[in-house]
Image 1 (cartoon, rainbow, N blue to C red):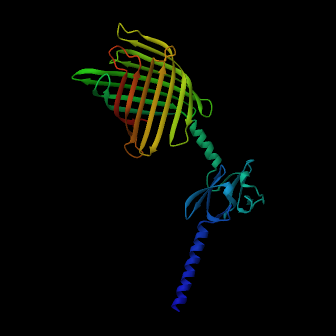
Image 2 (image 1 turned 90 degrees about the vertical axis):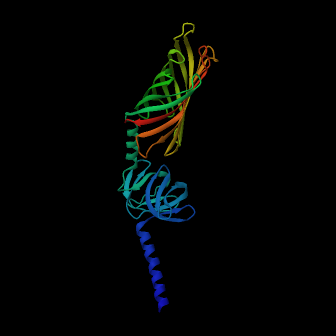
Length: 355
């Protein structure tokens, strides 16, 4: 008798689990190999079906792996010709769906979207995302540095930098202003000011044209003004991965005015080459690098190389405060007399986002 009761109880538990699973996950996929997957349809777009399952959470299945689909409730259906229906989907073979409302049997390749009727239209979501990308907005940040230097001097000092950007996905304006000053034994040994402005406008999927100007005053190198203006093409080589790489190339004009009577000023046509690298290693760590090479057209052995490579660490999750630590350097192949070719500055910058 006890054995009989135990057997009945087991059967009831199995029946209960089956019923509850069926009521929670009523939609079903039959795959190309005949396997049946119960779950809940989340979205179908771009040839892939997102399906919520009890055993594996959300899964993504390509249409070439699906033989049929059925739903327990009415869903929204949009075909490739933009006809839209709200109906249950019944099981059909040969990679087709059967729309209960009108008995149409389109193949999955003829279906543009499937989504639960209570959810937002994916086409509307796409349009909203595209519209958001076109909104011009400001991004501003202010940073304070602690830095060291080697090359023309060995010292420790402080600095400040303001960055501002206004734009959207297709075009943007960028500006920076920085000032660094260091002293040693009550003597100023670094007094450097930099200002840069850049305009970037995309005219093709991965191509944009740019115009930029960088101005610099460096009292240590006795450079009253170093100005480089460039115009060229930028190629956004990689954009859809955890890292982004952009390459640029163009013509430039280089002007340098020195505070030394025996030093000739530079006034020459040049070229502008650059690479920008941005890698989000994890949520709490990013690597940024910007390298620029400006060789003279008349004399390729006369060139400037500048680079800024740094790690960026958020000081707190969803915080406006970041820590940036890196190396900022300039290599001048034809420095003024008694000055070194390479100037390196290593720094630690606390950055506050103002937007």
